[in-house]
Length: 456
Image 1 (cartoon, rainbow, N blue to C red):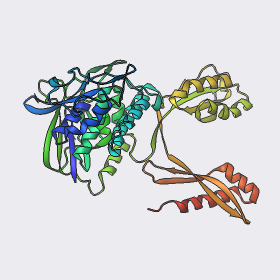
Image 2: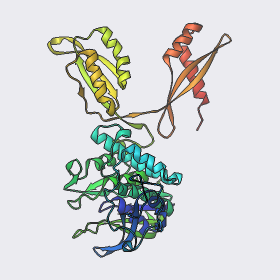
Image 3: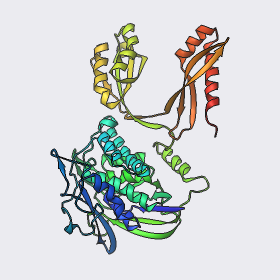
Image 4: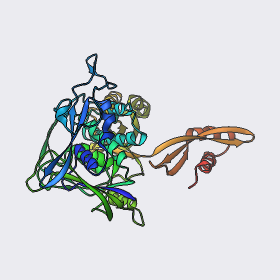
């Protein structure tokens, strides 16, 4: 099996991943679609890091773009070759594109990537990386995924890194990608929101969702960036060490900084090997992540949420009974009312509401207005694990008449069905019309849908 191994003992960033892929054999000309779509160009070069010759990839501002109504026309024409330039002094600007261009929302980034006309596999890889970034930012800031605004990672250079890595990876064509534990570094890092300890909040959140491990050190410097973590999380399986590999090619991608004792490079190895063990590496990785309380690939889908709560000791039953409907109109996904005992042994109710983070303020206000509560608190939950859900219509024939019942089919993210449940209201209506018990109606329609499911 042709395997690509990233050895991230001194971290990883987007430009280092692109450089390592080129050093390992990917063709820099594969980067052309990015220069076609964004006002940037790539400069590929070489540098020595602590005695190691390494490849560099710099994303530079392209100052020869056509302007339209004051904005960049992303379908612009260049008057030079779209491929990367090995001599940046001869073409365009030498100004780094870091932070340049529009800082986009997650949805704007997705729309831009989808507009590039990339091969399906490349587009999928890039979007997977940006979804990891988006979900991490949404979780850290308590926002909805589609409304999440990227700061450092929404500019042109970060998009060039992510899409560039996806293009180079497709050109290199490994059957499998793995990574050893990646060094995160230490100390603090300056971000748009202030000073944070390393690893940065978004990097930490991505690492909790990805299939590889991180390690502190070996120096007090940010070594693993959110962009680097997201690219690796989208493409690589985690290994504890470099697997058995008949190495065909080795390359090093350089970072910008120089360290006294540690070469600031990401090593990429390409060769035959790295096959899954007899039980498969996925099972081992799933077990490791489950023991760590982390999400397991291919099981349930991740859904960012906010959980709102309030205690009530004087709400009328009619008010409580109407909360399901009124709060749902404000954006609630689920409303639970639990009898409880409050101060002075008074009977009361705990109202718990699940909603999307973007709807939390509106739902809290509606909850306060409906109940008169003096305060609504948001609990610590930031996400939940949910099934992929689909509805099938089952037809039940009784005494020559057909009756339809909707049946909910719950499955994991990789399509494995684990529950089939008839809709109660539909079953109750059929039971009333036919005289059958509700549970018999449910049994029959669920059996019908189970029979129609694909067999393994």
